[in-house]
Image (tube, rainbow, N blue to C red; front, side, top):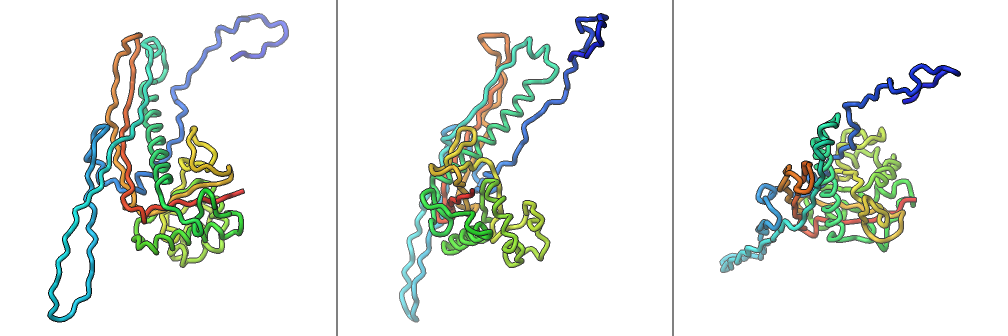
Length: 312
């Protein structure tokens, strides 16, 4: 940093006396919570360790109910033992190196700092991957919650998105999806528009909160809306836009995808398979790398849906 000198002042003219101070505090990325771990069935997570592992999930048998009359011979049903196979077929990694000289001269621990950042990036990529998988494989309901080719106009009226969430509830109700543990995931723009529906959201029959919901103050609520636990995430991108070069859908840039369903609809497993520090064979440096493996599977197609709205 150069100090301003008065005219003609030549003392210590080169400015080499001025110290350079490096802060020990480091500016870190904001860390966001993982949405996927809250909306999917993670009961099988402890059963995998490496890429290529498989998990066998036994499906609940469907029982047939028949009419009965007095004295009738009862026919027993043969139970099916169908199963679903979930494979750990997805993986992502980070790797970086720190030269010995850089490590020696650095005023911060770059290995620890970059490893923490790498773990965050793995989680961010995991969220995107699973949500994109759900979007690509979920059923749609054009007339109720919109599709890529036929989105719901979120600007049509102030209560439009509140009505969309209500329609999403109807879709799951018609499929006999349990009311407990339902979720809805959408980008921040969705919730910004939803908060404008003041009349709908102030109705206690909607929030079922005894009149104490925080959403009336414009804040994100921790109470269900129409029975849905609501999650906002940037991992759901504009349909034709991008988030870290990832895209959802293919239509106009003012379209926004959202997902809704029940926790039992999708299963996920994930595991940090490796985190290791090795010497670089080609230089005097440490290489730090981490491998994250995971799998995802739609278990109940009737309990996972996608929708698309337009805003702006």
